[in-house]
Length: 209
Ligand code: 3PG
Image (cartoon, rainbow, N blue to C red; front, top):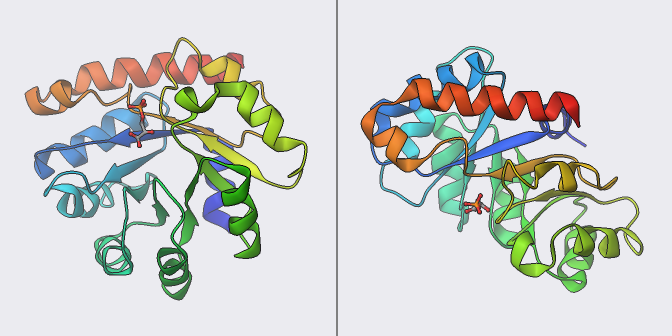
């Protein structure tokens, strides 16, 4: 496991960010950090994604990654902007290869045992499971852990503050992921106090789990 993958496993929570204004990225990262959450996955779902990665990467002590990375070219753009890990909703061996070329951690999404097998053949052992809630939640993760005891999972999609402890209780879960910490409206209105409050609530939950 790369050191960034280890850091994510220690942080245990990866906020998923959909952001419209790159100027909000730096205060958002500062608010998350102030609330006790030390990383984020900034997605490429908006045109602001790359610039937001560049801004958030300026915050000392904050680990910034890119999400919804769908092509090798996007891997380059994200790494050039300062992303230190790459997350995809699905498994694409070209994206994985380019992340390796650029020497950044890569965490592709899987939804089936077939995809876990494919990921293992690519030498990966930390995998996003997406969309975990729709796929079966903690039961799915426990079922996958039986044939794949060396794989660690990052469940995402349907994880919330209310059910996070159920996911963290699954032994194969390295970290959880979700968008509840950075509501798009709070980012749009510059309500960073709200983001810090949500981060604090999440950090308390992590400490208790
Ligand atoms: C995503 O990639 O959208 C994440 O899985 C976040 O899902 P959520 O909005 O259900 O937390």
